[in-house]
Image (tube, rainbow, N blue to C red; front, side, top):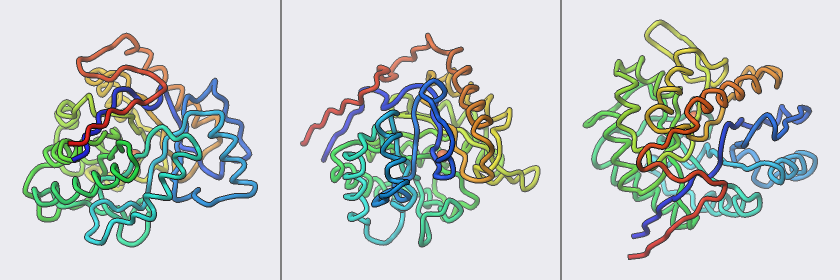
Length: 297
Ligand SMILES: [Fe+2]
């Protein structure tokens, strides 16, 4: 079994999801500490957009957030995709690869991400696939807690399932604060209690995003609106518990002028600044380089 222990955060500060539609915008290192893209949208892209991405990956620390690994799917793992991602990580000096703890029906659109049954069998199945991905990549990946709207065949609660997968796969966590907020309302649990049970030492970075209010008791994770105050407050509670982990603003639809997004990135920074001297037990040392210790036993 491969044991992978991350010693440090892959990036620092406040980040922004980079979208192709931003190609006419000016994003400076003074405004944003790191950037994220979906590798599936960029692998093999050359020409004008390829050069544009290269310019940014040379100037900024980058993380990638995959869409179509489909880690929970019953079909064979797409090792060709994993190998392409490995090359992309190398080509662009990517600091961390994260994916969704879910599966997609047939393509990687956000709305097609389906929940994995919260069962012991699924923990073992998914963890084995995550370990296989880490073995191919020769590095640890981070799995994201996802939003879900149904929980088929549930044997355990969401937090127990998530923690069991992280432990068994020995992988990192991409902490999505908006997803906790949305799930807590849709599935009627206490978001703070969920937050407090997450393993601090496994958090690699966080996501914050806006969502859509379908109804008072139904929120849909669209990434198409500004972050709302209760989610900002939950992010602050995450920092109070786990320290000011690197945090990225996701915005996939209804993308406003860049100045509005940068205002939200600044807001992340201002909350982080309130917790800048916070050092919880077990939190990794903050550094731009991520070191891995690998033991084969
Ligand atoms: Fe996310």
